[in-house]
Structure formats: structure tokens, C-alpha cells
Amino acid sequence: MSLSPLATQTPGVYIDEVNAFPNSVVEVATAVPAFIGYTPNAAYEGKSYLNKPVKITSMNEFQAFFMVPNPPAPAPAAKQYFPEYYITKQKKMPEKGHAYHINGDIYTVEPDPGTIYYLYNSIRLFFENGGGSAYIVSVGPYGTPTKSPVTPGDQIVNPNVKLSDLMGGVELLKKIEEVTMYVVPEATLLTPDDNSTLMEAMLLQNGDMGTAMSLLDIIGGNNPDPILYTQDIQNFRNSTGMNSLKYGAAYYPFLNTTITEIGEIDYGNINGGDVSGLADIVNPPAAPNASAEQILGNIKSPPAGMTSSQLNQALMNSSKQYKQIMGIIQEQINTLPPSGAMAGVYTQVDNTKGVWNAPANVTPVGAVGLTLNINDSMQAGLNVDAVSGKSINAIRFFNGLGILVWGARTLDGNSDDWRYINVRRTVTMIEQSVKLASHPFVFAPNDANTWQTVKSMIENFLENIWKEGALQGSTPTDAFNVAVGLGTTMTAQDILEGTMKIAVKIAVTHPAEFIVIEVEQEMAKS
Image 1 (tube, rainbow, N blue to C red):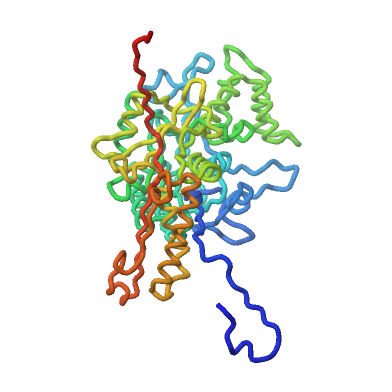
Image 2: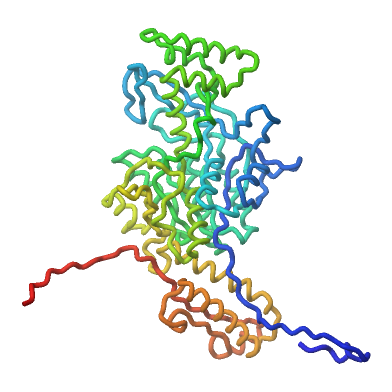
């Protein structure tokens, strides 16, 4: 636009800046998860951040807002997550769950359900897998222990994890359109009915907003029965309803990880901190261990200058039984739902390859095992469900390759349009990018000049992402089509009512999920 005549009434030199570049569509961020759950702390510089979404970009920022501050050196670091486990001697092998042989006797090692939480370690797993920006919604601090373990083989239901808390956290995300993933690792610690209510609410909100997907975990994935695991899958499918399934993706089973190191746990994690029950284990009558007995005495009455970490290490060095128990507890703490790792995988794939690539055939960093080894026939029942179409993405172990994410489907597995995660997320990215770029044209003249400007802007954007591989087709005209105008997308009445309608058709690339190689013998030729 040239200078106004009124601006040039005085003799002199004037500068008129002309825009060389028209308005353009900028690709919105596609990997911004929101984690909802319980944290060790929720305060920063004296201000509470409970039930206030906070955007972080690193583990250091998470520590500042949501972790207990460390005391000054040389005091040991503060305990951020302190689950409790009970070591119980059994007369015979339990019918369900795991049991361990220690000193020739049978023991179970089961958690106090009121002390089990997943969010803290899921955040660590997220950043380890390439996570970047994320919103954290802390819905409360850790609750009080129940002072008793779960029954061996039973699912962990934490009475301190409340449906109302998590629903309130999800509700807060209605105001944040930047979020592209909902992750609630502690949802599996709810009762099955409460878990169902939460998942349906998450999917419904995703559908209403059209900006995010929910990454869902499955109750039972932490300790699946090799035969009866199918019941857990069926329960999950029955619990997610039929609304907005294209905005959900589920992963199975849980991961055995290396997130929590052995130095982060000690005797305080055992029997509610009462070490008396360890005496018969570390100093059995059949094989006395005077050194271990003395260390137990020192734990009860610590000598001056001795820290808990030093006493714990001394007991591990002197008792192989205690070291075995610490290893069992570490393994159980490190059994985590896959949603946190998958949020990191989505971020890494988006940043390195583009959101149009499937977040699959990737190894979750920090995963060293799975709670269930799934084979081809088992995955067939997960990948395709003829009745509901609700696909479950398997995480599998392959000899020579390791652990791989071996699925890229939404819960809407029966839909040709929305079956694949990368298709759903690519279309969401295009929708939101075009929506934001169109804001400057609100109240612009609804005429041919504006229509052509908007059309060119969107076409340029789509051509750029087509060149990057987001859209299929050998030419731009094969990949997309943009239409806007009177008689094309609008009527005269639309224009009178101030409505501009834009029609965008795109051909999104689909993953090569099934690669079929035909081998045929041919007769020898002379």
C-alpha cells in the first residue's frame, strides 16, 4: 500500500515499505503432549502450580516446578518417588502373580498400592525418547500409603488416584489448542469403571476440539497373563465407547525400563521402612551373616556421619539376598505404561522425519524388556477387531532387532480414512495450520481478490509439504486441490451472510503396513 496523500504534503524524502512476501501458512507444532497426573511437588518461587498447566522444555524445568527441591550439599538428593513394597513369606506358591525363592523359601514382593504412581518416571522416559516441549498438569501430590500390599496377581488400584482429579486436569486442556497429545499414565491405576469414564471423556474432548489425540494404556499390561491377556484387551475395547475413536491410539504391553537406577531405592522402600522383617532373610539361621546383622543394627540406630545411602550400599555388599530383593523392587518400579515413551517417539519422528511418517518400527529408548512377548498370531487379534475395529498397537521383541513399536493404527481401525495415526495427525496439522493462517482475512472483503490470495497461500503451503513427502501424487495437482469462490464453494447467500468457504482436498500418504512379496518359479530357458 502506498503512502497516503496526506502524509506527503510537506517537501522532503519519504520511505514507503512494500511487503515483498505475501501471507503464508506456517506449519503448526505437532508434538506437544500434555501429561496429567500426580507430582512430588507443584510450586515454584512460592507460587502454587496445582491444576495449572505449565509448559516445560526440559527435565530441568520439570524439576523446578514439580519436584521436591534438593537440600544443600553434602546432604543426599531428595527422594522424588518413594514406592513401598512388602516382602511376605508364603507357605506355597501363590496361584497368581510372581513369587521368588530366597534362602530356599517362597516370598512375594508386592507394592503398597497407595504409593504407586507413573507420571514422574513417564516424564523421564518421554525426554529420554526425544521429547521436547510438553505441558504438565499436576492434579495433586502423592497420597498416604495404605500400609498393606496388593494381593499377588491383582491389578494395582491406587486409592489416592481419583477420577475427579484426572478429569479436572483433562478439562483444563480445553483452553490450550497447542496441545496435540493427551497422556495420563496413572489412568491404569483407577478402577476399570473409572478408567473407562476417563478414556471416553478424553476421546470426546479430542473430537470436540479437533487438535489432539489421546495415547492410551491398557489395564493389565503391567502383569499380563500369557493366556488370559485377551480378556484385558476385550475389557479395554468395551471401555472406550464409540465416539471420536480416530483421535485415540492404544499401546500394549507395559515396558520394562532402566529409568530408575538402583541407587534411587533403599531399605526405606521395604515394609514401610521397617527393616525388622529383613533379619531372617539377610541373616538366616542356616547361613548366619554377622556382617549383615550388624548393618541392620546400624540402620535402626545410625552411627554419626553414616548416611542412609552408605548403609544401604553396605548391606547390598554384605548380603546377596538383600541385593536380590533390591533388584526385584527396581524391576517392578521400572515397569511402566508405554504412553510416556510413545509421546517421546512421536516427537522424535515428527522432528526428524515429519508428522506424516508413522511413529512405528522404532525402538523405545530405555526399554530393555516387555511384560509380554507378542508373536504374529497374538498381534493378529490386537491389530484387527472385526466387531469394534479398535486396533491395539503392539510393542514387540524381534531377535536381532530388539524391541520395536510394531503398529501405527488409531482406535478407528475399520475406517479407511482414519485408520492410521500419521494420517490423522497430518490432517490435524494441515487443518490447524490453515486455520491460523486464515485469521488475517477475517473481515477482509469477501471478493475475488481475497479468494485468490487465500487460495494461493494454501496451495503454496500444500505444495511445500508435498515436496517433503506428506502428500502422495506425482504432481501437485494429483496431491491436493484448493477451491474457493462464488459458484464453486459459495452461493450469493453465503456472501451476503459474510461466509467464506474454502474446500481443501488432500491425498495423504498411508504407511506400507503390509508388504507382500510374490515369488514365482519360472521354467529354465534354453
